[in-house]
View 1: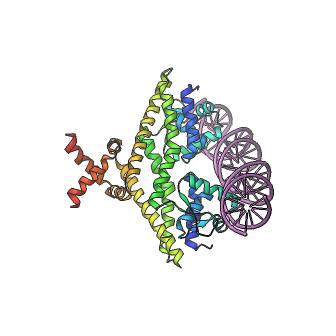
View 2: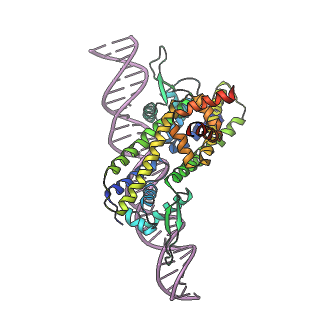
Length: 180
Length: 180
DNA sequence: TATAATTTTCAAAAATTTCTGAAAATAAAG
DNA sequence: CTTTATTTTCAGAAATTTTTGAAAATTATA
């Protein structure tokens, strides 16, 4: 499969960026390719188009499935596995956000909970624990908030975001009414 | 400087996590150490405590300063450079968020803008461009939103997040009044 | 200006991550 | 059951990132 210039640039760019977003170059490129291709792709298509070894493609597809970013589909009369994006761009973005939170924030939260159960030995340990408490509270708040956002429809989310700084005014309004 | 068990665990954990957050293990450990230490630290303190070479500490401090996460302070009658966290936990979190957005989202946005100026050659290129448009719009919305959040005080932010799913009701309320 | 203290730089080494490709495993078809 | 198609695995190779440590540069003091 031949990609046009702009598309190739896009795919390569997502490869570079992929590594910053928690997955390898290959995985980034593959996700980009699957997203911008109208038809479903099989492992050989991907391997040829991106010039990546068959084994690597197989591993990367497993990874992308574990991230819930692509899904496996079948074609009648074809034994090969085909892959498509697991939803709209919004869905994918939400999924990445959710998965990263699960992989990056949750382990930290449990580490912090453990540390906060101990009794501090001295002055320094106490200060340290206080900071850990602050980080814990912040992460917990962020996690809750992420769940809230994840339960919202893309439309609601979009409305909220487009509100921009208006949200502050809305908060003030709400406080005037309920907070009294 | 000797760290107590819990603190050491915390510092090491942030080392592991650091790599997922866009900086190296060393940088993660150093930031954690600086944050949980009540006093300011100099490069030798850090090098000794974390058993990291002096050169590495120097480079990592540069990096942390470029991320605006630590700041340089001086002590009277002492020629050494000392470092402290560049603000509260909330401040640091906001800064990481902001910097990452600048480093990861902005380059993608400009790449996408470039690609969207081209006229698509064929059916496939057109589909591809449509997806790029969707990604562009999403990223732009996220960027704007990030700016909004960044302009809010921690208190307002906290209020907003604690509102949780209540924010949906608030949006509905607002729509009823203004949207008519 | 010379000396001493401190920080920075960077080539090479070490560690880690990613990738390849051939062999093994699995699954479908004949 | 055998053959063929397809996917997966994984040891070693390649690429990339991180770290060290000694030399160079910088800055302050005498």
